[in-house]
Amino acid sequence: MGKSRAEIQKAYRERKKQKEGETYLAKERKRRMTYYKPSSELSRRDRIKRNMKSNDNLRKWRQKKKQEENRQEAENNQLNESTETSGYESASSSRLQVRMNFPNRKRNASRVRISRALSKAHRNIKDLKSKNDYLTKKNKTLQKRVERMKKKTKTDSPRSSANKLIKEAGLSKRQGNKVRKQLILGNAVLAEVKETYQEIKEKRNGRVATLGSIVSGKIIKKYRGNNWLSSQTGITRKSLTSGTTKWKVSTCHARKRARKMYAREVQEFLERDDNSRCQPGKADSKISENEENKLES
Image 1 (cartoon, rainbow, N blue to C red):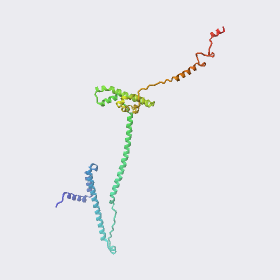
Image 2: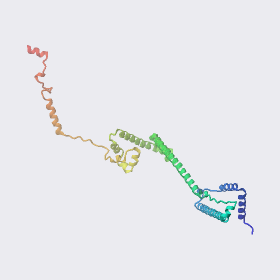
Image 3: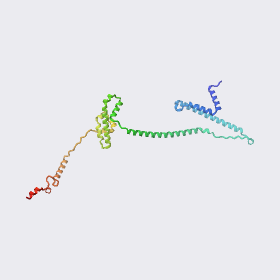
Image 4: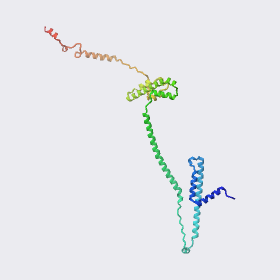
């Protein structure tokens, strides 16, 4: 019976290995690598299938290696048994055979490979950690820069805010002209309230509640605009809702009894001889020249 195509190819590869040796194996490895696909690109099913196949090949290779070692040991034992003779014959023999069992370094090849792979993984982790720290620091720097830029940007004017709102709403020119004045007026009032609040806050004179009671009231509460008004002006919601009335009457207490007492004391003080200007004493009188001439005559 003739050979199959697989058997013919296998025999051909064996002949090439014996003829070219390591050159052929290197060429085959290079050829196989062109068809190799990384595990990350495979599906889970294909990856499991490849791993199972690799494990089977590795198990077969180890069994084959173990069989070769056992066969070599058996041959060495047979050789030693055949060379064993009596002391006289060994002394007269001119040929001496010595057996030296060198340790097989390939037994620890898997451990060395694992150790090297582990060291490489640790180095990669260390490099990735350093890169991560660098990128985290750079990200924080950029965030701070963005915050500073936001603080530097000026707020829009009432007119530009109104135009921007009209543009975002997609209104036509005619529709925009109808609502532009109302929007500008509302934005101007909000800007004025916000500026006044900032001035009061800087001076710290405690008039925030008064301002909140003026700009907020029953109508704002009815249409649920306290939160929006607080976000636009900066006034806290507590200050907007704490005011009870928009005006206060300053009452003046009479205290009539105290006023009469003080008036009487002032009058008595002024009517004293040493303080009065209406009826001065003799020491305070002054005689003119005409009166002196009359007295002398």
